[in-house]
Length: 187
Image (cartoon, rainbow, N blue to C red; front, side, top):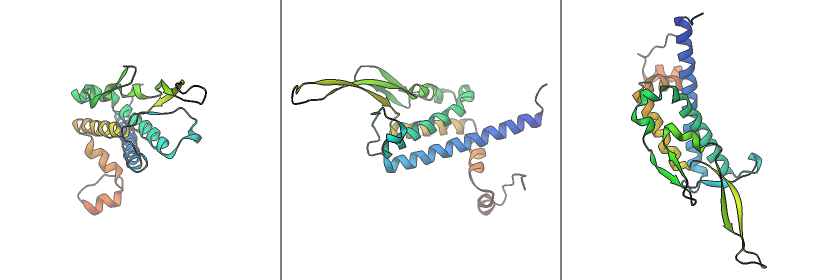
């Protein structure tokens, strides 16, 4: 059985609500990261359980997770985002090994669950030149996340969803107070 027009309308309304929530969560995570993160360019973090993360590490991890969720909501509309979906937001990040990770909406998922082996100098009394390899977790730097968020918002504008999302993020009373002409038919 084909979905009715009302079902399609409700599905779109649910998607807009979910997109709006993802956008707000990302915005909140960006604000928190601006307070908690001392180095907005940092990429490598210790591979530790969540309960052992520092506040700074937790803020970066949360920011990456919310941003990936927000961009995932836009993915079905990628063709309509046009060049915004495939253009570099910032130059690709290059690791010491020469491997690169792109910072582009179409490939932002590659940052998820990425780990790299990092060789570090670990001098000891017996061997001052000792080196060890440690696995590090890769997180999208806060500065890159902010630019990616802006790019996703440009895509929202291109899709002409900005007004619908903004109206969903504001409470009904605030909307009536600031623009009594806006009516949503949900009274």
